[in-house]
Image: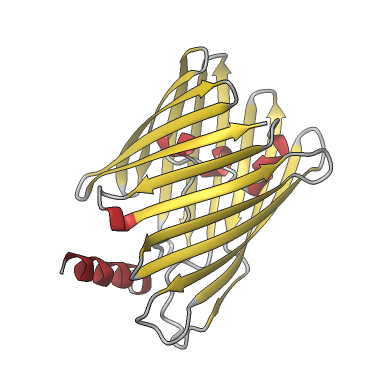
Length: 269
């Protein structure tokens, strides 16, 4: 009975309430800082690949509202090189009766000492016995990063443009917005303090924003906090590096639905 109710909620929220993106999550560092993905997370802005120093393998798990059926799993590989940094990421949300999946391919290029460009292609599909055909979605993200001075980055992100649905007969059956435009910044004020902020809008004309900080308490240990404004959700997180491994954890609080939490591990080489 409980799983049937959860399945009904998933389908209603995905196909009746636009702008619900269950699959895509940011990395846990960005999530602990209010989810400022446009200048913090390669999983949002692909141009950030061009400023990474090391190649990485990573795995993230994010659980919404302490309900296991509302969990998103993510794994990926980011390959850093001087010619064309690239990444492959796979996401999966839901459980056996209803599962949303996404495969994301990203590339980036340093255009100059100050400008960086990135492009990502996402292929999404839904697995469920309730549909005769598999709903699918193909989209592109374009990210730009600008560094006017040392330790300051300004980013712009256009998500899901162009975008096309496949095997959906009803045009109103959209489980994500067709596009989103975001801009933001991150600034390392001093050696141990980083601040970030983001503002964005979607196809449904909703305005969103977030802000966050990261403070390095001591070598290899970071404290993070942030705030999302729509809906109003405070976040907190920590990060700890052990040799080539980085472990990140984050929590988010929704005033009506409660806590969501995530943990991630990254191996750099």
